[in-house]
Length: 374
Image (cartoon, rainbow, N blue to C red; front, side, top):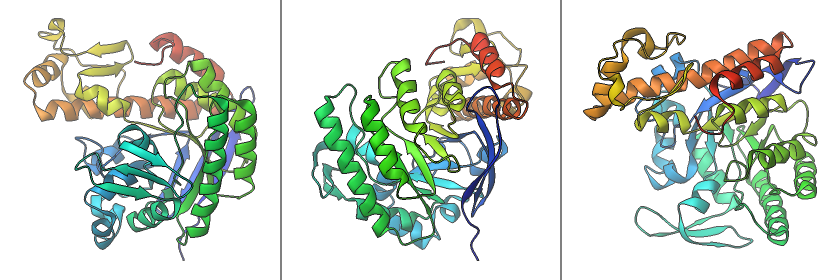
């Protein structure tokens, strides 16, 4: 019998809404809150699945849009699903591809049926519907699957946001009806920056009694206070016993601010993307490894970090690899950045257990700077 998917809340910080718990999945139990590395094309860029796991990752993500285009869900299914295809021994989540459709695809056309767009690789016409996306995700086989929704631009007029949000609710109901597997289908709460629309969307989606709830349409250029308001306007109406997932967030201030508001799960490409550009997150702030001053710096990148990179290599060596455009350098720096964010969230979990999350958050932001980027 397949193991059930559910969230077990172990403790709620007495001074904030921060929650510590265990997310039980068919591919293992993982602690929340958690940062989830992104493996868009069934790989976290430059890292092996074993390395990702060793960094403390629980759930990792793959993307329905990109995997549908290549290699195709049928290939992944024939391989035995994503877990076997990429040899990841842990829980996985597939995004519906909605964000990619609306950010990458050209000449998209949104109708009640779904969204029609051009494949960004070859220009072919593609139609995503709530039903077809579920079918693709069921073949991919992740533990958690996301329904098709529209990622609304910011800012947008309320009339458009209302129509789009209501359509997203209808699409979710169609997705639920089409959903035949035992994968955990999450809802994605939309509503833009409008409190009443966030409230109505969350309440309607809550009625469907799904295994988890995501907060979408954030981190797309809106000010930080607006983002936090969007989170507040959704979270207060979501089930207390279901996981809450804030999509596409990877900076310290946003992660910690959302944890304080009762969010459990986060994902972002930020740590690996920064690493590929020579930007490193450290306990002393951001390090741009290409700078000349690191050429003869034989000290470790971050003495407070326990990752493989910091235990074995110097800043001078990392700079050499980056300047020489060696792939090994991208791997070493990705290892560090991913571990850095996961370790920050591990610290948040321990702080929640001791009812000192607010103090922990303030210490972290004072040390690293209260800013969106790193």
